[in-house]
Structure formats: structure tokens, C-alpha cells
Length: 348
Ligand code: SAH
Ligand code: SF4
Image (cartoon, rainbow, N blue to C red):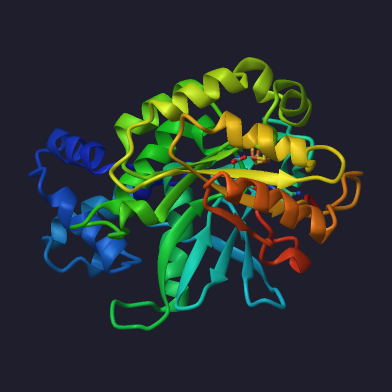
């Protein structure tokens, strides 16, 4: 017999439609989701504002899944990597990063990734499958419970970044469902949309859709400012070259004061010269952009090297002289391979 469906795989509209098909009032969907996401219910029995019959009926058809924690590793800088086992035996990871007065959670959107970027550890294992919507929001739900962050707690989870395993825009429908629940005010997680960031390697048609479908913030992994270098590092660039990517970013609907974040991994001798910095500044002129520079995180089996600190500073200076907000991000959790892009649940 197959297991009952995880109720978190359904959007509110889908749940309401399911209820209507069973002669139940659609507004119950809101109540049910409130129990699941706001009150962290683990069973339908707890849902005391529903009739006993309805609770039993729901329990016949649905489960409220938790992710199975296989391992937790804590980095010297305090970030924690959670390895989760999924129903079908696959594995994926999330990273909880303590910042000055809040937590940021880095979530995965796929098991593995099909994009094949040369510098990325996740790419090495290839693509296994998309995460379901329930598995994506499950990372948020379970880690909110884990840190016990109620509204009154000092250290709350306030930021979510889709920078774990996978290319979120390649799992678009499930990403959208998850985003809706994450920012939903009444029966969801109530995150401020500007604190939820979707990072993409540059799936241009999906970037265009995301702009109309979700208020989340956009980050683009750029990593090179000319097509030749970018196509070498990121195969997706052969399909959607820089001209198309920059145009999609230029026309992306942004609320006032918001900008698109461009992530640029600095790799020694590949994309870290002053000329590269100038090219990058020119390339992004049409876009409301800020830039995160990430010195490459070395990992075994990859010959790329991290540049000298002086090259990183020079690169940053060139961008700042050209009026770009430019931050150097030393990835957290590097010692436990929790750094973004380093996530790869090791197969047995
Ligand atoms: N697929 C999406 C989101 C996951 S990757 C994307 O590519 O944007 C998240 C970030 O990790 C990306 O910005 C990527 O450029 C970065 N990253 C990947 N490998 C890295 C490495 N070895 N060192 C530093 N950053 C890396
Ligand atoms: Fe996939 Fe992003 Fe890694 Fe590229 S950088 S392989 S898109 S996870």
C-alpha cells in the first residue's frame, strides 16, 4: 500500500479544492494549514477546531510529515548542517546560519542538480530528483521548531535563502508552492518577502515568470562577465547567454529600494583579474544590482583555487569605485562543507 500523501505538498487552493470535492467547506483549508505551519501540529487529532469526523477523515487521506534527521554537524563559526533522509531513501541538506541577531536558513530545492557548474560540489553527483513542495517547506517548518523561535525569542529565523542543493527555478511549481506558504501571513510562516531569496544559475524564462509570480528576492549566480568564461564555468550560459540574462534582470519587476543580488565566485586565474571586475561593472550597468563576491571554496577533486586576499580586495575596490554595493562573503561552515554550493549528501 502506498503511504498517504504529505498534506504539505498541497497549496491552500489545492487543499480547498480537495475539501470541496468531499463536500467540506473550503475555508477549512486555512484552519488546517494554520495548524500545520503556525502551530506545528504533528497530527490531525490536535486540530481541535475541526470536528472529530473531519479529523479522522483527513488522517485517512493525509500524513503530516517531518523530515528524518540523519546527522547534524556544527561548524566552528556556529552554522549547523542538517542531513535529512527522505521517504524514498534519498538525502538532502539544509544549513542553519546564526547571524548577529537572527538565523538564516539555507534550503535545498532538489536532490542533486542537473546544471553541471564546474565549480560546484553539488553538480558532481548529477541530478537525482526534485524535492516536493512538502520537502521544501518541511526544511523551514522543522528548523523553526528546532530553534524554538517564537515571536518573543531573541534569535529568530528571519531569512531564507534557496542556496542549498539544486536549481530552484528548475523545480518551479514546487518552489512557488513553498514560497507562498513561507510568506503567507495568516496560515503560513509570515516571512517578509524581501528576506526570502531565490538564487538561480540563470534560467531566463523562469526568471521572467518569477517576477510576476512571487514577491521573493532574486539572486543570480553570475561568476563571469563574458560569455566565453561563463559558458565554461556554467553550461546553462550556452542556452541563455549573458545578453539574455542581463535583459531578464533589467526588466525584472523590483519594488522600490530593492535590488537583484549578483553572486560572483572568485576563482584564481579564471575570473578574478581587474579587467574582469571592470567588465562586470559595465555588464551590470542596466540593472539595479548589488554584488556578493565569494572567494572560491576549494574541495577535493576540483582543481580551482581561491585567489589571494589582495586580489579579492582589488576586485571589490574596482566595483565600489563604480558605485556598486559590494560585499565579500566568506562562506560560513566551510569546515563542514556546509558552504553554499558545497552541499552534497554523500551517497553510501
Ligand atoms: N542553483 C542555485 C542555488 C544553489 S548554489 C544557484 O546556482 O544559484 C548557491 C551558491 O553557491 C551559488 O551562488 C553558487 O555560485 C555558490 N557556489 C557553488 N559552488 C561554490 C564553491 N565551490 N565555492 C563558493 N561558492 C560556491
Ligand atoms: Fe546547480 Fe547552482 Fe551548483 Fe550550478 S551552482 S550546479 S546551478 S547548485
